[in-house]
Length: 480
Image 1 (cartoon, rainbow, N blue to C red):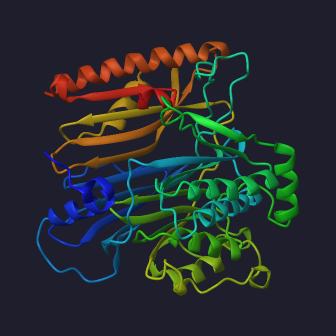
Image 2: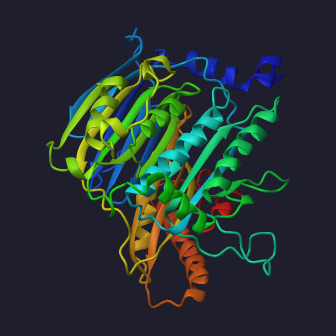
Image 3: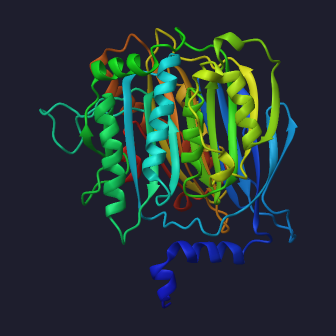
């Protein structure tokens, strides 16, 4: 079959056209769930669509988007309603101008610290600053496809190891770091260079580590090229200079927020700038584009002076009113201490909706006696199954695993019925295991669980040639 010039030169436009031709409506429907403590049972997508589930500490988010199967004329713009405690639903008219080729992308990792995730109020403001710098660097030209914090920070192995990454030590599962996936304009590589340069200037000033995807031949996702190393002394000094006035201690009260609207370049930069101007910290971020619908999920610490002043509730508000209410509850300074910000109505996020739940206890930090290590899972199946929970159950059954959780799951159900997904699971091994034995123990654990899960799937009727499953504690191994 001959490929047209339009498909070859403009794959993003061809993708939008194909999706529009196979959809009954120009709008995408969505559901959003905010949860605290116990994560609700996950239901795999039943229609053509995508799911995203993120958990950090004791809270998390569940997102689901799908294309309507019944033809109709949905309302224009963003429609969102509260369906219950922490549950929201609605529809978004997609933006046909949000074009990108997912085959051409790169990732940027910004590290604020290598220790396990336990931010104080000043750290949360430093995360807001880093988020603002990263999204502003993308500006109005580079689409942001995914942004997550906290994530597993990266540290270069010592020079005595080979450069192929075989000396990489097990990483901390969640550290004070931000990871951003952006689409590339292959016709203008200067955009990518300018973006990295702008972030590098900020990283050097504030002592943050910076890595970019290693794009050399033969390299895959999970392999990094270090631009700057993390400088803890500089970071602490700058944090004190900028936010020494922030309250002491680790936040124990937070709100869960989701900004939702059509994906537009520059929308997340406007949201980040507004949050920083109002001195609102961020404990975690999960920004994703699902079927051209943008979701910005954040966990925001409540100001200590306003803890307990409002009852737990869910709110669904226009972005301008929502940010005003958020500033009253979560701004870490008095109104006079906040910086002047532009009108959010004059930005690409003008019609976004803010979905709000809280206050809740975010359970910041890990148990003192446990070190959680990340395990990555990648799969493709001809049917909908909750593979991460299946893998998680087999991991916990191992005698050397004392605790664990599913941190991240993303899956897509294609029109042909196949489900492709990726997940990150954190496990804590028995503290009695010597540190030098941890890599070998993790390798044995991943190999055994992969065999067990595959056997389970085949026993449930899946055909071996249709199943793809990889479980590894080094991220690059699931990409090869």
